Length: 287
Image (cartoon, rainbow, N blue to C red; front, side, top):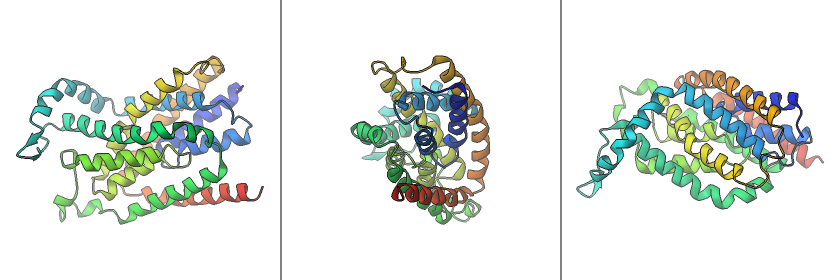
């Protein structure tokens, strides 16, 4: 069972790495393995992700409130979604955002549910984590070739705001989120990078990445906590303090990442992921 200080430490790691594109699940898996906590920790990890979901809710509270208000307009919007045999242009951006998030979530769940047991079984495999970090590094590095935001005036049609993001884009970003279920593949890094490569604006890429995480994290929490004895193995006091730590540190990390995304510096994190991936493979193959 985790001590109070272990819970606080892992909460700090989760809060810091959930929003930075360096994979919080990968860091938790590595640390838990070397702290001999690699058994029965999935529920604790899900609760930490729930805590950082609170950070998202606070940081994007205005956008989330708009989405909640927009829910009542979805039925009317859907009636006019198809016009003249093709998708209508989205005039109601909050409703269109809800539609896009729905399709991204469907794409994620389609992959995540069948792969759930396999991922849990191999969650602490250093070989899998190492290869996943190398993948994350490559994906982050690829954002160097995304359309620079400063060219927006010259290539206005190629830079997508919310209303220009298509359902196909949403599905691809959702698939990127599904791949990020692997420990070592950054959820924020893979989804933001995919959006940038699809020429979504930097600001919208960051915002969409974190808003689309809400239903997936909620779903994972409900599934995990519905399992028998998922809570009884945890120390509730230590877990609660760990979650509070994750929430506070996550809010700070989120405030740091969004400006970095807007400045186009996401690829800087690829070096860290590359080094961590090589280290994991070295430790695994050297055993």
